[in-house]
Length: 438
Image (tube, rainbow, N blue to C red; front, side, top):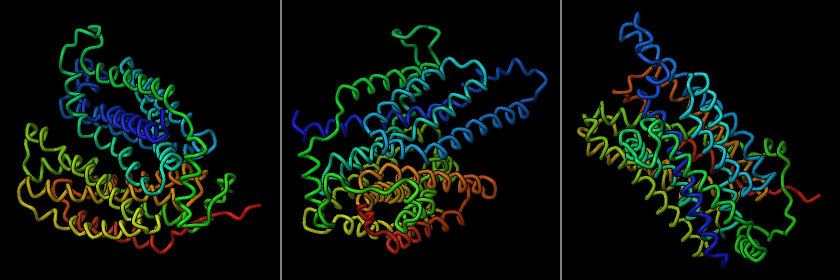
């Protein structure tokens, strides 16, 4: 297969893997009631009233989510180094196969401890796909296509969020002649996506290979407009050296500051739309995915615009910074959201906020690829992702503890400041980082 066709086939497989990644992690949230009833049957707690039973199961669900998030953030720190050390293709294959097997295992858990251990394991193996995806895009795509390719791959997570309620609901509520009777119900929502993941892993094993020399050479020549041409043996930083680079801390700090806005969209927006805008559950099923769909399409469109600037002669890193500045102009919309009346204006506002968040994340990923040597891209993106998850987790904790999620005007007004602060930090600190050759 010709390299140009192969690179887009690889991108399509990454996109599919990202869709399954987000479906697998979302099953528990969608089927919370059914899973907790299976692990803690109401009949086994006859002395508890309904309020006490709800508190008990809610506490266990909170611990389950906290365990996943903790393992996810901790794993993120090291998985980028593994991608750089052992190769993106090999590590992505291992990740897809592992999280698919863990997802299937969740269907057969019989105790909360066993189920929790599997969710913790999912948190460990899932983050590999993110630095792996960025490293693959960096290696396979030239600067003039890199932002577009990165956004196409990364938007798979958003697509997974949009379709998960339909896919998971269908699997959990319908009878399926092609599944054993014992696997019906909530267990089918773990088994089927996991099996699809194993199929994608098999395809990846047969399709993926490292880019040929002519692709790497063409990419280096295109990047020469923004830096001196690299050699085949381009020097790279040691893992420990990254922590001493100003650009590294600019990227890490920017993600810690601005990722919480996207975390709000992921975890608080569904409840906000229903409680603040008055959407019923039936209406939310059809309308709740609109902000995420618009965000994904907007992320791809803005990335294509950035690549167009590169093709017109603007240096790649300068093109990404220009886009970040333009995107930040959408940030004040967060402060307007609490004053919107009705679901339609609120959905429009959050569709634009979601576009800001996803486009910004897509662009900063390419900034990493064009700031550090290829051999360090996975490590930097992995560490920055860990700090982004830490910032998002802290933000969600404080929001839930001190704010009413149905009426958070001060929270949203504060969110309007985060992207401008992060963009200012990024512009002040990030420049090309190249170690001196020994």
